[in-house]
Image 1 (cartoon, rainbow, N blue to C red):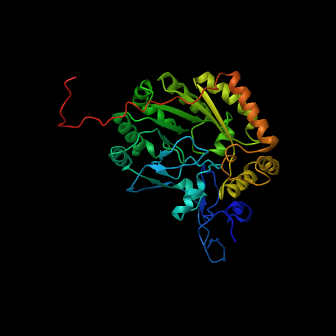
Image 2: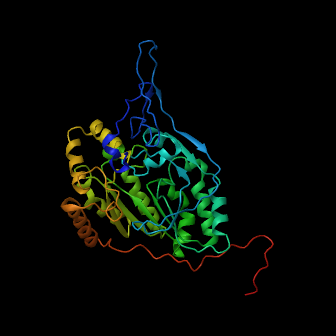
Image 3: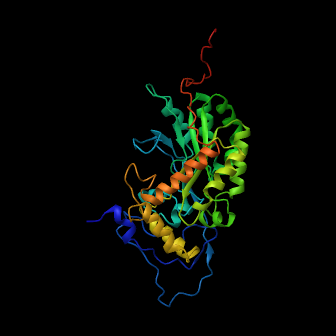
Length: 370
């Protein structure tokens, strides 16, 4: 019987398409998703004329979504509702735990995840409808829990901006996790909401090495830009948490303390850390990336990851999937706890105010006399 827990052991990647020139992409192949019964592989039969490789472009498809609030009851996650304005992410982070979600669309978690993006332009409209329903119980909405709401397509589509405008009008609390510099565009909204204790932001920084960042996260802002994001948010009064995630043994884990120091100096108030997770299709994609980018240490990196995951590439169990287990994981967490305390980043997430939530006045409404 097929087991998703062992998927990373049996999946192999197809060869790269020689007709595609990959410019700043994390994955190098387009493996079929786990639900597909067949996988196609290109074979040269000698009859095709040589073709000049064409640069693979990003394709953004607009979808009219039917709902926008996603609910969850996971014991590992401190929120029960989230909004994802986009499916897929052009940042192309090779380790991204969200890659397997593209398999539900019949698309590859490899190159398709970072080149075939689905946007939901009616997200603000749906959000206003859903939080305006009779009986709606307010609680913070999390953005950026699956794919980044501030990826490149946001610059023109402005979907996240529209969602913020809705939540600001309703005084609805929210949190945002991102590595996208476009969040600075929305400081006018975020700063005002922060003054009312309605928002906090997490900025993900995995490395201070621009070269390594370019390899791991090819279309995400550079580390220096992310530090400027923290600085800009902090100056606007927005509480910022630096998220040193994921930490990858023998690749970027040695930078953890320096990342926290730099983020604290830029204005971060708190910090969190998660060891790398490689669920389902992510494991073979990550292995392939290691072999291409860091062949000399690929086997060592994977052996140390497995030491934190019970001898496997990934451990999907609740309670341990975000922490890892064993001496390797405990040492990493101990280093993080000590650095966080020394730098004064051991604060809890801000308690957001749900008491201000109210429907905004509409044209024609009777105004209050008081």
